[in-house]
Each structure stands twice: as structure tokens, then as C-alpha cells.
Length: 569
Ligand code: SF4
View (cartoon, rainbow, N blue to C red):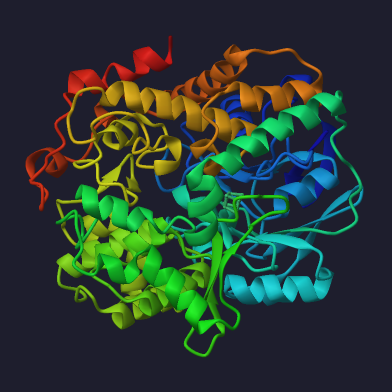
């Protein structure tokens, strides 16, 4: 397969063979290796020396369900450390059809112009697109599909990315051609903006498929894989009916749902924004709404949904747990329409709903807005594209918001805001947030499905280590982590690799690719100046009791410091 190298200074793109050592890895693991090799860790994230990488996985386009995740990565403008963020959608499969394993965007353009990188069969070309300047992601995708055909796929930034706002994400095409699949976290949209790249457009017409070395073995491995998905209630019934929204009530019951700027772990209006309310609203309104659909071809789980307004017109797709919590309970907003409107505005402006949700919660507590005021929050998000001062501060994320308004209590680790997993109530995730190279990021190791008492400090280090290895392995194979709920036996995934590539690995392969990824990320961050001092949650999580269970985060720091010796073993 090929790597496309794009020089934004000369405006030239070239193809090169992907090194053999990259064959069996992709996405997060590939990004970590390339960054460690090619990017000076101490560089400024918005400088010409940083690189933006798009990467696909080794199983994409082979018929393995959910293997078409697209990863974006680089040195994070938000955290100053390594960052990989992945999305579902259809862009990765389209890249593989053009035999592309990764795209590396280098340098910066000389002027202020904006470009679209257009991938066609055997060709990659930078095309000026100043007419898209300032456009939201919805109009950007619509115009590009009009220009390049409805079967093209797109990854774009909105006004927030163009302004290099630190909460900016990259918004990629879903099955409907909408920008609903998001590489949200870590400010990678700001990195794309710094490169002068408004969009990546992948044209229809690629004919490549990864050759499967042992088709019968793959058929057998896929049969087992599907059986496990079909026989696990979460992947067979819960996700397909409700998406990820049931986690609202699960966390509410645990006292771990971020509420009123992390002041409480339960929300009096949780039921109004929970799974049943969401499902009922979508099905009763009908029209363009749909409680379940897939973000990419062949996914049997179908956790995406389409939320319609009261007239049945599509408001946003999908609405997921993290967003329901961070734009809902964390802001005291118990109204699905208000949350979905906010979600839609965030997608259009191009910001991560978690980072902006935390920043909005802090602004509400500081008295700049009122808790529960969805219209005022929407006004702030809309103001990003207009360059309004408060909007730009909040779009710079939780840490900047804290500095500008003199706020001590900032729910962030390594510069990145906490997602909707309260570490005082689910303590293992606090260990993950403390130690992950990505900062506070649930996609690096959720523990709430681990067999451990979440509210006691014991066993949390082990739970986090297990979860971090599992997430890193899934992310390095480009698989959607929601499959991980069903797939407990690593050999189910290793067998897929063995069948496609004709290898004979055992479970050690899975652990190896995960640990290699984690080590490379840690090495990058150490060289960028991070030390063990950064492996800490903000002090208030240890000091402030979280109602209603009055929990604090009390996993001893010496225990947390053990994580890296476990992961480096
Ligand atoms: S489980 Fe959901 S996010 Fe994952 S591939 Fe399927 S539809 Fe996409």
C-alpha cells in the first residue's frame, strides 16, 4: 500500500510505498510510529515542523465489520503531546480503495489560501478552495459533494479549525454524506487549519482491495466474530436500539454523571436525556429520524441514530452519550432538543462537544452564562465563526478558559478536558486519565465494564492497564471499540489478521502491538517535556466530595505511578 506525502509549502503531493514494517498495524499505532520518527517532539504544534497524519487500518475494506475507522494524528495543539483521534464513517474505506494506507501533511502554505486535497485514482492534488473559507462543515460537505460527485467522501474543518481554535476537530463523511463522524479530540482541526487544509476529498473510483491470503480462514474467523457480536446483549440489542445513550442512566445510578460543571454525579433531569426518552422522541416524531443506523458499511451494531425536530426534519446525526452528558447534564440542560441543537452547531462550527461542553460548564459556574440556558450556550457556539471574544476563548478549551477567567477548578489532564466519566465514581478511568499520553480521553481506556468495584481504590491500576492495552490494540487495528464490548478473547481479532495476511500469531501479537503503541506515545511525550508530574488529576477530584455518594478520587498516587512499569513490562 501507499503513503501519500503532501508538501503544503510546494503544494505538491507524491506517492511512496508504505514500509513493510507498517503492514500489520494502522491507525493509532501507525501514527505513533510516524510521529516519533518524523516530528520533533519539542516543535510548536502549529509550526511547519509538525505533521498531520491520516491513517487507515490493516483490516479496512476486507469485510471485517467496523474495521474502517479513520485516524487523524499529530502533535496536539491542545495538549502539546501526541494525539490520535479516530472516527467512524466512510473515508478510511474510500482511501483503501485508492491503495492508501496513510496521508502525511507536511509544512505550511506560503500565503493564507485554503486548499482541498483531492484524491483520485493514482493521483493526489491540492486544489485552492478559498470559496469555502468560513463555511460550516455542513455547507462545506454539501458543496464538495456537488463539485466532486455524491459518491465522494470528505474530511473537513469548520470555522473553528480555520481559526486554529484548540477545541477544533475534523469532521468526516458518514453513510449519508453528512459530517457526522468526528475525529473530535485534541485540537487536530486546528492543526489541519494551520496547514491551510480545509478538506480532504476522496473521489469515487478506487478499485483496490487488500488481498486476503487465506479466504477460507477469514470466512471462519468472521463467522466466530459475528457470532460473538450476535450473542452479546450490548452489541446485539442495546447499541442497535439505543446507541450509546443508555450510559446516561448507568452513570447517573453510579453517581458518576458529570453534572453542573462536575459538581454532582447525578442529574435531576437524567431521564429526560436518557435512552428511553431519546428512543421515544425519535420514533414518535418519525420523518427523517431513525433510532439506529450504521456509520460505515457492514457494521452489524449500528449505534448511530438520527434525531429529528418536531416537524420530523433531521436535526443531528448521531447524538451520543458523551455529547448528551457534556452538553446536557454538565450544563444543567435537560432538554433533548436543546442538546441536539447545540450538537449540530458544534459540528457545523467544527468543535469537539466534550471540550466545549467542559468550557461552557466552567463559564456557567463563573456566572458568564446561566446553567440550563441552552439558547445562551447555542449563541456562544454560533459566535465562534463570527469571531466573538467569549466564543473564541471557550473554543480554545477548558484550560485556556480557566486561565482567562481566573478559574482554579479546571477538569482537564495534560491540557485536555475530561469526558463524561467521573473519576471519583468510576475510579479506574481516573487512572487512565492520569497516565494516558492523550490526557483525559475515555477512548484510551474506559474501565466501567471491567470487573472491579468502581468506587473503591483497590484494583483500579490493574483495571486501567487492562483497558489501556485493549483500547490500544483495537485502535492499532482500526476496529471500532464498541465491538470490544463483545470481543473479550484477543484471538478473535488476531485470527482476522492471520487470515488476511497469512500469519500465525497468537495472543502475544495483540499485546505487542498495543504495548508498542503505548510506548511510542509515552516516548514522544517524554521528549516533548512531559514527566510523571503530569500523571495527575486536578487536585479538586481528590479534595472535593462528589454528591450524591460523597466520593473522592482516592487511588494512591504511588499506585498510579506503577501503571507505566506495568505497561512497559
Ligand atoms: S458500532 Fe457504531 S461507531 Fe462503531 S462502526 Fe458501528 S455504527 Fe460506527
